[in-house]
Length: 489
Image 1 (spheres, rainbow, N blue to C red):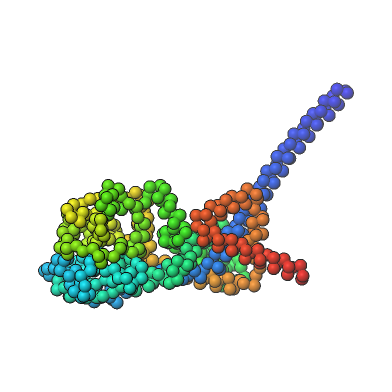
Image 2 (image 1 turned 45 degrees about the horizontal axis):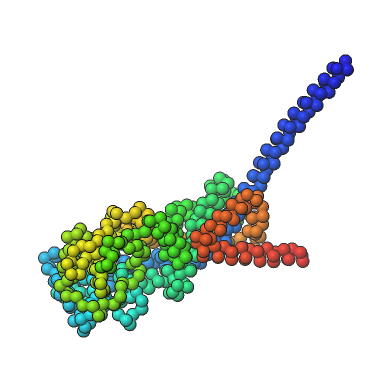
């Protein structure tokens, strides 16, 4: 009997230990589930709070970038009306025989009263269009040129305008472009557009996350869930419009950052390191076998040095054009860049619509032989994507449909910003949890991951990183003020 009692006691202890072990396992799983359940809401709150700060503090910059970008998208149509006399001629049929480039350039020189060579020439791309002869002028700002518009059929001077960069942007578009890029404030003003582009994609993805994690009932019929029905209706419209525009928002943000001063430089540094930069022909006569790498934003930069002291026979322009056509540059939009001393001619296609025609060649100034040629089909994939992205951002890739899409995107962005401020205004008396508090609710692993991601993005996009620190500083001051008010109450 004693043995039976001992066995029963030991068996009972074994059963007890097994049950205790099972309870401990259940308790551990429960704590893990509880921990997970506690930091997921904190992560949601963090996304919501960051989305709020972006909308409140960066919203005005995003709004103005969208407004000026919308105006830029409309400039091609406006330019055709405003500069119709300079851009077009009276010729309406293909029977009109154009004069040689030499004669057209001579007409431009006669109009100016000197025989200085132009820096670049753009032959008339079609019947009824003018030839653009661009001259360097020391009285103009860097990157600007004086363009004389010549009727190729009767050598009439149709216009005399200041244009910007090698793209020959006309005055209206130049002003709107500089307004969009830098608020007309130079390099310092470029920080505004970089700030807007750096945060736009984060705001878009944050809005997607908020919509995704919101209760299904709140998405479909929020009016029954909240006493502020008007604010929630605005929120529903805001999120729906954001979902519709999501791909466009991400595209605008990515392509917009390529123009930025800091993030853009980092982007092209990565492209260069990976061998993905845009190939360009060399114009140096002592280095014709080596290509150079140029910025795809070259249309916003200036031409080469002045050609006032370097004379070439005007007949060379026609010979160079004929040789470029023979080499396969068949686009209507083509540009001849006059060489400096010890340099070759550079002829390039400038038709950035679809399909892109941006081939280029370098031509010897004496023998007129093609020294080097780069075709768009030979571009690395990343260089092609960069070219297409930039052109789509500028509204030239798909012509009028592209411009209408950009206009719709711009109006949509401005509408979302206004709706965002309307929601904030109606809810402004309420107290929301500070950003620092939501960070404190995250587990150490999630907090470290958030910190690493933030540091990486801040390094790649310094303007975004500095502004994030400002967000945290503002939030910290708000926490401190709220704590003192609660203590004194």
